[in-house]
Every structure is written in C-alpha cells, then in structure tokens.
Amino acid sequence: MTQEKLVEVDSSLCLAEAEKEKLPHLYAHDCKWYAWSRKIFGSIEKIILVCGANQTSKSSAGIRKNIHWATDRKLWKILWPDQYKSKPYPKLMFWYLYPDFTTVDMELETKWKKYLPQEEFKNHPYWGWDYDPVLRMIKFCNGNIIRFLTYGQKSSRQQSGTVHMVTIDEEMDPKRYGELAARLTATDGYFLKIYCPLERFSLWRDAFECIGTPKEKFKGALKIQVSLRDCLEFDDGTPGTQTEEKIKKRETYYQSEDERKARVDGQYGRVENPIFSFFNREKHLRPFPKNSNGKTYRGVPPGYSVITAVDLGSGGEHNHPAAYLFLAVSGDGSKVRVVYCRRLDYEEIGQETTDGDVYEYYRKDRDRILGSNFPVSQVYDHAAKDFGLIVERNGDYFEKAQKDRVVGENAVNTLFRYGMLVINEDSEHPEYTDSEKLADELLSFSREKKKSNDDLVDCLRYAVSAASNFINWSAIESIELDQMPVIIEEAEIKKQDDASDTTRDRAWKNYLGEREQRNRKRTDSLWQMNRDWEIYFGMRDEY
Image 1 (cartoon, rainbow, N blue to C red):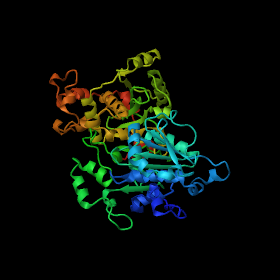
Image 2 (image 1 turned 60 degrees about the vertical axis):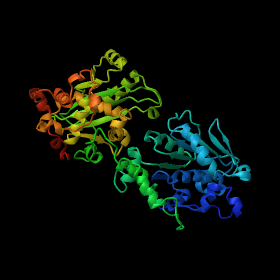
Image 3 (image 1 turned 135 degrees about the horizontal axis):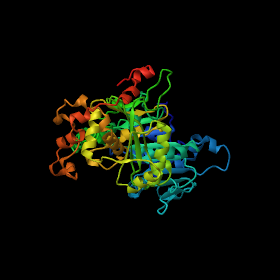
Image 4 (image 1 turned 30 degrees about the vertical axis):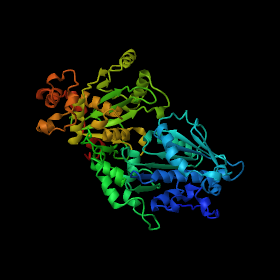
C-alpha cells in the first residue's frame, strides 16, 4: 500500500454556519467523519478499494467525494496536472456505476440530492447544478458532469470520449474493469470501488485476502476494510451512529456466519451450500510448470491425452457467453489438468457470437495450443444443433456431451477431493487462459445459484465425463459410496430422463461402469508414448 495522499477541504471558504448547511457534501453531519470515511474523502490515490459492511455510510463518502472533486476548482490542477498546463481547460467527466437504473433513481432521491449544493448555491458558478433525467447526469454550472451508468450497458452505448474518474457502487463483474481502466489511462484518472463482499469475484477478493502474497491484486492501491464496529465513534471521539447493542441485534438477523461476516464485519466468507465444496483455490489452482531452463511450459505434457469440451451459451450481450476447455489426462490416468480454458465474454470480444464464431475461436485456439496433439475426444452441448452441422461441414468430429449433472458434478468434486485434478494458471501472463474465471465459477456455484456463472463449469463437467475411460478411478474405489460428496438435491436427480429408479449411488455406479471396464489395459503404443513428466523436464511434480 502506498503512502496515503490526502487533500483537505478548502479552508479559504470562510462561510457562515448557515451557509455551510447549504453545502452538505462538505459540512453535513456537523462536519463529523469516521476515520475511514475521512480517508476515502480526502485521498487522492489513483485506485481506492473500499470493502465494507452494510449501512456504514460508505456509499455516502463516495458520493460526497465525487461532488467535491467536480466542484472544487482548486483541486483540478492537483488531480489532473498534465491537462491543466494550458487552456482551454478540460471539462471533467465522472462516471458513477450502479447495478441498474432502478438503483440509480433511488440513490439519486435518497442520497445524492441530500448532499448536492442547496438553495442559492444550486445556481452558483461552480457549485451550481441541474439534473437531466433523460440522460441521467448531473450537469454542473462549471461544465463538469457526473453521469450515472450501469454495469450491464455496452461500452458503445456509454458516452464516448474521455472519463476522469470512475466510481463503482457494489460488486461489479471483473470482466468490465479492463474496459473502464483503459478509459482512465488516457486522462491519468481515478478509480473508486465501494462494495459489500457478498460475491466472490477473485479480482476483488484477492485484493484484500491476499495482501502481501504473490496473488495480491491492486498492489499499491489504498484498501479500506470497514466493519460496523468502525462506526462506534467519529474521529473526534464523539459517539457514532452504531452501538454495540445495535450491532449485536443485527447479527441475529443473519442465518449464516458467512453472511454475518460480510454484512457486519465487511469480510469475505464462503458461499452457502457450494456444489464444488472440495475445490480449494490454493490447492487446485496451480501455475504452469517450468522446465530445466526455467521457462514456463504451457503445452500438454508428453503422454497425456487431451479431451476438449464446448458450451455454446446464449450468444447475446446479457446472456450466458460461450466457453470451451482443454483437459489433459496422464497416461496412467492418475493426473488430470485443465491446461486451457476460455470464456467468450461479450465485453472482451466486442460482439455477439454465433455457433460458427464459437467454432472458429475454438479451432484457432486448439490448433495454436495443441498443435499435432489432436484431442482424443471433442464434446459439445448438443442443445446447440447448428454447431454439430457446422463442425461436420468443416470435416471435424464432435460427440454429444454427457450432460447428467449428478454424474458430472460428482466426478469433478471427487477429482478435487483426492487431489487428482488441478487447473493451470499463468501468473506471468494471466490473460493467456481464463483459469481465474473458472475458479470464480467453481467458488460461487451453489445450490441456490445453479444457473449463474456456470459456463466454464459446464465445460469442465462435460470434459471430465468424456474423460471417464482415461481416468484411473481405482485409486479411490475403496471409498464407500456414502462417503462421496453430496452435491445435488434429490429433486435434481428426479429431473433425469431415467430418474424413475435413479439414486445418487446408482448414477455414480452406472457412470464408472464395471471394474473390468474401468481398469481396461492400455495399448503398448500408449504406454511407450507415456514418459514420466518429472524425468522429461528434470523436475518433480509437486502435487
């Protein structure tokens, strides 16, 4: 964390007490601040992340900061020195993003209008303002603008040109951050994010939970974590808005410890009822290995068989994106690796995808990454009938994926449980593979939220199901079936076509098959092709 850079409210204003009440963004609440909220308001760090409990007034601190920066002309040369070296001076553009426009309208009425300049100051040359309800923007008399946007808008629908400050209220999907950061680069602008940690997006979580480690995100940013107990008193020692009695009462409202941690302590917890309960980021998200020369090896290890899976998604801007994944299984079937995965997020590729587009993206990545090591099996979500026709006309061959959720989720969870499956990540070039996105999906995928962010998870299920005959299940066959992870409700099993007499045990047994089939002998050529990876690279496999 960098040394804090702070600015103070202009002390030369010399306003009477009655006039101060009309500039509430500066003087509200009898000029009382919490230590952490004063830090948010006064800091001029380029990136500020605020992770906090509900009802701490953390959003109000961000609102007041935006109004202050849009109206205090003495700050502009300090904040954007390169752009104020010569006239004409720029008109500053502030973006404030909320989850949806319903939230925008509510926040405007309940918070923004409470802190915007009042009465005669509403027509002041610098503090004066007016609100445009059509464009949803605050236009200041000094020419600056605060515009309200939502996470789901296309960048092409957002105002083009420069932006000098971006504020995010609540947890935005990280896939939008790159686009916003790129816009701020042109102006050397500022980024402020204020949220309660209810989701588990790795970009935001690792910023706080991995401080001081190689996985830490936003190193050097100002990071502030706020609990309700940080609101017991203001920084002048007078009582705050919270009391210990109020906090203890609120703690009884939440059914789980994880929700209490997020809403009261402002800390991350675990997802309730996770389906992939045995996935552990530290254990299963592993860097690509390095060879004896210290160079990262991103290919498929010799002797490994490759199985690929494609999920076609819905293709639209607000729908589920397409995804694909490359799974590698060692010759003896004891090691399984996700060597590459990609999710075709609309915000990254900039267009809607047809089945033909998805096949082209997949084919290019397959040829680039696998080369002559052609997959032994390629499977796809056969709900997308056009995809099957497209690959057939291109002389390619795909099989229909095994989509049984009971089978796929059990298989994936079991591989994680016994340390047989890892996901390779590229710490040097994180954009190489979408391993972080896959990890986010695995961590956030729960019984309550089965259809959110499951695109890469579906690919993993399909690939593991297709790899069944290549995986050596004998290492775990001594485990009793009732010890297998329970990851799906009985109601879900009944949805299967043959579910009239299906149970978890029956689904699992049918999938693994008879012992003789699971342990069928490999051909001599396959065994000759399989070399020990540790000997080949002169290293030991750590897991």
